[in-house]
Image 1: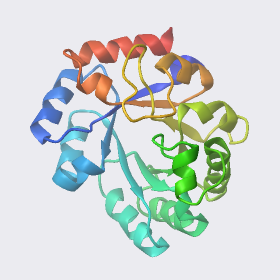
Image 2: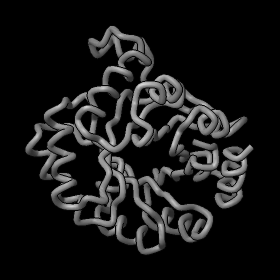
Image 3: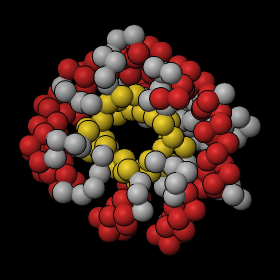
Image 4: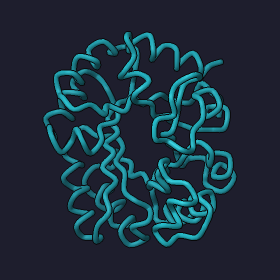
Length: 233
């Protein structure tokens, strides 16, 4: 995989729909992928998904589903009716839950890829220990990644620090999606396991997710171009 195969996803984490749509209007033709997370989806629902897709963007719906298998399968079926290309579930939900999600997608929308979320980028060893997980983050990520891949997911969400480790153990066709990306000189905010766009692309990430460095920029379009330039550098 070359660095040019790495795609940029904008994390559309904003409080207001109009603010989000205004930014998207300025990014048409410059950006292919948009991530809609829990905050925006709970507030604006399917309408925002359809509006974003109508502008020509591909949608990554980041809901991080985590429930009993039947409930997750039903949720996937609901999402499958929308113009969504990728949907997240928590790998820690277990094999049965992930298999139910994958089968629901295959049954209702074969073009919908289910991604397994490994360990959130806001977690470090201390955070994991507080939840009863004594493994270091990289080992917990590897454990969950193997479980998710064997459950049939089409991709994994992990911090950029685990890309190299996972590239050595998961099939090439499994996409690696990496939040925790900060352009050179940007604040890390609450992220604890981060890389620059260039570093993540070099390590083998298929998709890098960036939010605030674009959303808070005076010129979001220029910020996107700068990040795309970093990927290719």
